[in-house]
Amino acid sequence: MHENEIEISDEQVRRLVGDQFPEWAGLPVRRLPPVGTDNQLFRLGDELLVRMPRIDWAADSAEWEHTWLPRLAPHLSLPIPAPVALGVPGEGYPFHWTVVPWLDGEGPNARNIDPEEWARSLGAFVSATRQIPGMDAPAKTEGRGGPLTALDE
Image 1 (spheres, rainbow, N blue to C red):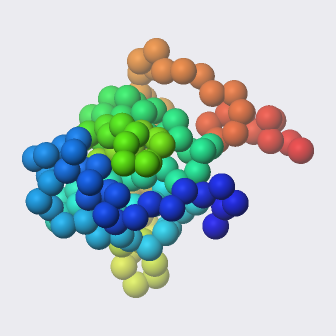
Image 2 (image 1 turned 90 degrees about the vertical axis):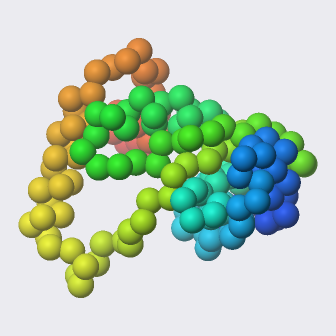
């Protein structure tokens, strides 16, 4: 997908998990189809997911998510995949990576959602995010999370 994208093998993920998190070494690893541009996802057993950044511009995301998502999760009205473990580079893989809980579900579509209930749930989630204390979080001033005026061009 990207010119500098890193190839990540299932076996590489098995070795990283086994070396860094021996309590999960016996769990099966299953690659999931790419659904985004930054991470390759792997199911780890039935209850976990491994998120591996596959491009350099996403390399800092694992550490950021490991720090901030567990702090945000208790304040939100819906579950989020707050990391339960932070992996470090190894086995030829150059970036930090995370293990998060697997959240069952499917993407919303016309046959599986009630639009009014979905709108209420989304509104409650947005409202909850606006109530979260600052917690000395860093201010981002460009790209995602920054002011729209920075994207005028």
